[in-house]
Length: 107
Ligand code: SF4
Image (cartoon, rainbow, N blue to C red; front, side, top):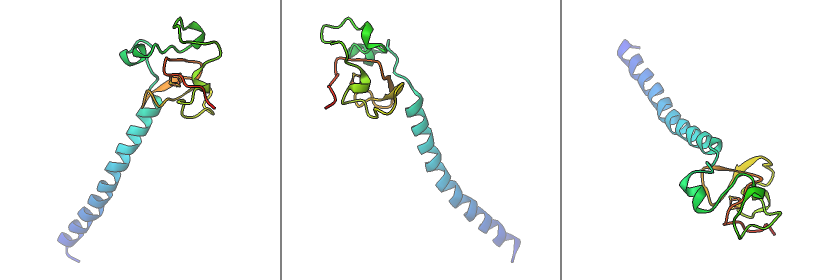
């Protein structure tokens, strides 16, 4: 085998591996970033819905005792008892004890 053939083969082999690795790396970054970021209570999006990390501190007229993210229909995974996803705040984690004006009682 000529040296030139070897380098072409090596290039094709690693080039193909690189094309597979880039999308996977991108996916990993997106997933990790989405899972790690907690919603900032003071952000504009949180304030727009009067979100608080601790529901009992809410002074909003709509808040009713016992309402918490963990028993809200929009909390994506009730098995997450500390921080979890919310359909209203995609890519962010909300506190299981939190609350916002979009609260919908779970069944
Ligand atoms: S929609 Fe429900 S789960 Fe999401 S922040 Fe508001 S109360 Fe919490």
